[in-house]
Length: 400
Image 1: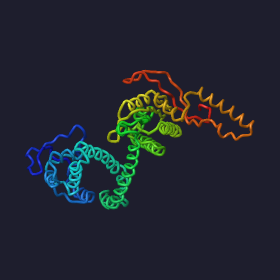
Image 2 (image 1 turned 180 degrees about the vertical axis):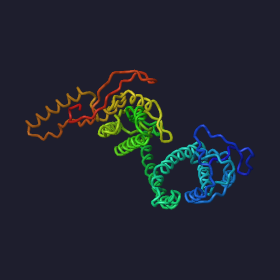
Image 3 (image 1 turned 30 degrees about the vertical axis):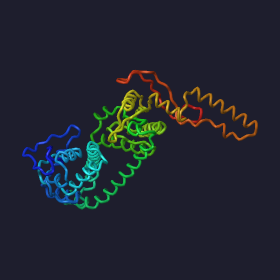
Image 4 (image 1 turned 90 degrees about the horizontal axis):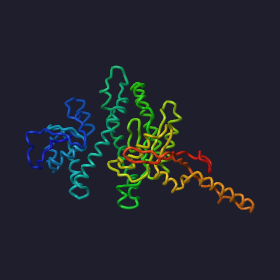
């Protein structure tokens, strides 16, 4: 919970005027103010594992942190301003002490520590909201007539809390290990921050019209099915889901071949589901800046623009992506080249058969994808681009 925005040191008394405004970097959740509801207090004590003991000033002083720094840490985590109410616990003091200790030890700069607090707060806030709105709400339906939801909630949380906590830490460690592995494999130090990635947007066609036609519940189910399908496919084939935007998902992959496979599988999956609208995908390849789990830069903007002009049930890619697919051998430079290679391989096979040799070395290149150049067109803010239509290839030598 956010403390007063003062510059008081650890040994100073807080000023009488404790009004605070949220920083422009993060929207503070003012619904999280302390409550006097007995059940809410019991649940809070259960979840936090401690009783309310400190005002924000007392917590900052106990942690040995200035009020100014404590205010910025808590606000970055997204907690509400509570004035000088006695609502903080030993856990709040420990969190302050740990963050400040990382700064004092020189492991993190102060801005970086605040960024850690903000990214953790934003991510876990979304997770907590989902678990309460969808997960716990469904599980706390009274099992017997006459029982209230509140009578079910406490014992359920008591049982679930340790299991969900362990699972959260496990998933976080696995994700941290995967992300660290990707970064340390970067070609140089500069690429650790500004990396070359394939970035794709997948967008449901005609979603705005659907919002007018479908009931809210049906629309919510459709969005959830789309996001779930996309998340599963992206993860299964080696990509990373950056974020979901209702009718659109943003994903990234370390190489063009992985991104191409994900994009085509997304289109194929949506086409097989009669309840889903058509899908269009745009992908670009190039330098991407990553911050707080999101991606930024011209490459991302180009992928978004390509999505907006892609035909339904199709994938458009930029020239850099097409070139990368060709470089890695996932696609031929042209269908003419593929035809020449097929003819040359057929001739080698004929000679091998004539000479009684095994023809393994004469096999055709195993191109997975085909690329068809489209008309050049101006793209708002990015100049003239030449998109390529991406397709899955069938047998070697064919473009379908």
